[in-house]
Amino acid sequence: MKKGIGKSHSKIILIGEHSVVYGYPAIAIPLKKIEIECLVEEAKTSFFYNKTDTLSVAVFTALKHLKKENAKIKYKVTSQIPPKRGMGSSAAVSIAAIRAVFDYFEENLDDELLEKLVHTAEIVAHNTPSGLDAKTCLSDKAIKFIKNKGFSYIDLNLDAYLVIADTGIYGNTGEAIQNVKSLGSKADIFLKKLGELTDETAKILTETAESKEEKVDKIGKIMTKANTELGNLHITIEKTDLFVKTAIEKGASGAKISGGGLGGCVIALAKNLDIVEKIKEGLIKCGAENIWVEKI
Image 1 (tube, helix red, strand yellow):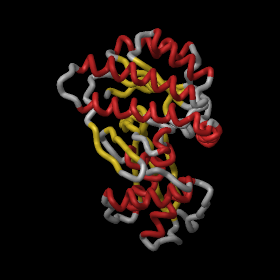
Image 2 (cartoon, rainbow, N blue to C red; image 1 turned 30 degrees about the vertical axis):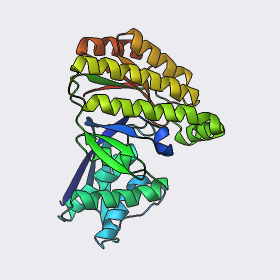
Image 3 (cartoon, helix red, strand yellow; image 1 turned 180 degrees about the vertical axis):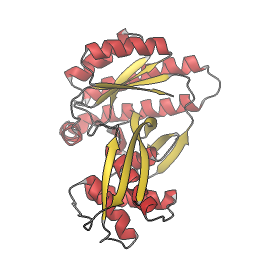
Image 4 (cartoon, rainbow, N blue to C red; image 1 turned 180 degrees about the horizontal axis):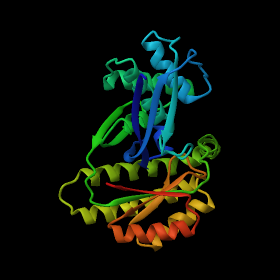
């Protein structure tokens, strides 16, 4: 039986969410161990296109490019990436699905075409995607992104660990964006500060003079400051505040929410695996639904 397989990985924003919408930089990290796989197989009937479903849109985008819209195929996805948590599930599912369709038809797919097709699918699903999620889910390296200006790659190489804790509450990006907008010009100072903190982080990551330990300490402190600014923008909630406080009490160098806000994930930076274990223990007691650890 003919098969096509496509894979992708997750992503998380280290710093710069929300302010990125206003032209400030953001830094995103690929989470290579958190994966999604799409399997495409032969079917008895033609593919059914559902334009309200991200996965269906991605499959259709690939079929349309290959001029095989009426192909008799079905698809199945196995995912470790939870939806609506700021972990790039939509972009990752699009990447995996498009790769699987091309693999099924034994067609060549270079990264440039893949990115273009993913962007097309994401526009149908999300209207105005920045392209950051797709770029990071396709990358092995961290990415610094500025809207309308482009991307650059960053080598992290911190010898530290990022603990990602799922609050179990769907993030609500739409509502969070409205919260920021409703602050009007009051938001400007907080957004500018977030932009400055992101620039500072990028600078520390690219400096060679400091030890890795010093870098981790500095970036941790910046993360916690960024969380305060995100709180000023009214996009943190009681549970994420509790997660941040607990992670720091358990030895994290710093912690913050990540993604759209009003739920979703909290990320914490840890110097070593002993601290990681203490953070995990503390966050599980606070009600973390899932915890991932990525070496950065």
